Image (tube, rainbow, N blue to C red; front, side):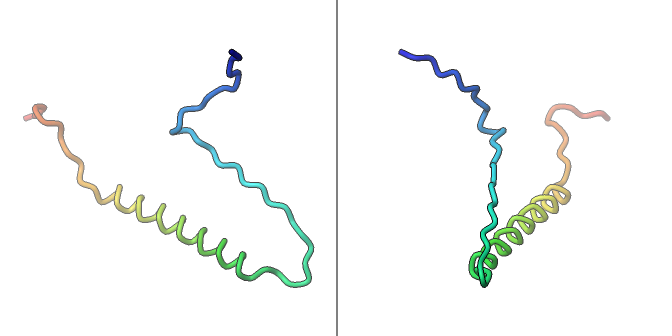
Length: 68
């Protein structure tokens, strides 16, 4: 049996690699460009919503630890 020599990363540290290659065309593919712009806008809106939710969450004290 062979050993797996690849280093394994925990799933929490997944990184996505995106490769973009330019192709010369007479006209741009507006459908693809539109989908890309929409995906970027959705991702940005999700990040903003998560940041806003995190900022509005009330801070809770730990149970059993009163400092009075």
